[in-house]
Amino acid sequence: MTLGFAYELALALACSAALLGVLLGGELPVWSWVALVAPWLGGALHRRERALPLWLGTGLAVVWIGAAVQLVLARGIEALVLGGALALMGLLAGRLLTRRESAHDAQALLVALLILFAGAAVHVQVTYALTFVLFALAAVWTLVARTLVTDAETTVEGRLGTLMRRDLVTPRFAAATGALSIIILLCTSALFVVFPRVGLGRLAVLGSLVSGFPEDVSLRGSPRAAAGGAVVARVRGLSYATFADGLYLRGAVYDTPVGAAFVHARAGPGH
Image 1 (cartoon, one colour):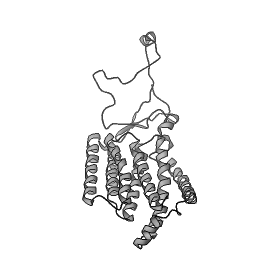
Image 2 (cartoon, rainbow, N blue to C red):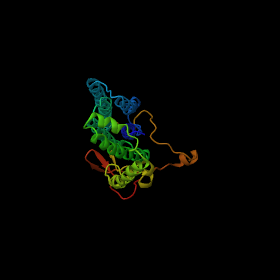
Image 3 (cartoon, rainbow, N blue to C red):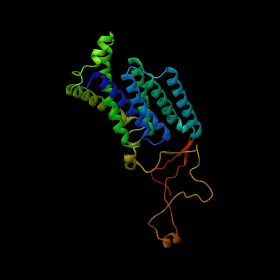
Image 4 (spheres, one colour):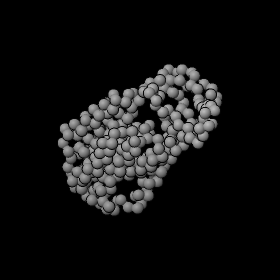
């Protein structure tokens, strides 16, 4: 494997992992999955020393930003993180398709990192951890390979010669970058656990082990129950005779107003 191919592959994997970190949350429109084409198409163009016109990349980013604004207006302020992620995806796609120099690659990697941060807020399934690990491995590989490529950009002959070398990307290279990635993962995993917005308790797979009730009930947005015979709860495993005798449901009582929400002030669930 040549250094040039390894560099393009690592950058495409890092950007794709960041995009999947948001897309797998299932909150964005289906059409947004088209953004996954940009890392691989941009890499193929860059390998042939080609790129789309800058005005086309700018127009693409503007379209995605407009879609992000429309998403926030349609869903309300609660979709602000989703809208920001959608706008960043458009910026990343435009940057990848118009990249011409190593500075553009660094910009793309930075935007991908911001997208991954947004994914931590909208993607609370265990699959986020997989995309996080993939991004960490690919990003470290990209940065190490980029250092080698940048050092060779002093002359055209040196750049072409370095990009075509096959003795740099070896099993030892993969082991060294993998070990560095593991160190970074161990450090960032500790930060992820204590991060106030997410943490382990926010993961869907562990949410049932923490609490069955939300911390507060917001007064904003659409009402949780609607008139006109809407079903708000279903009870299973109960005979009709027992139901006819009288049915009592237990639940938390949110009795303390705090700003735009109610919180549950008692120690245990109310009746």
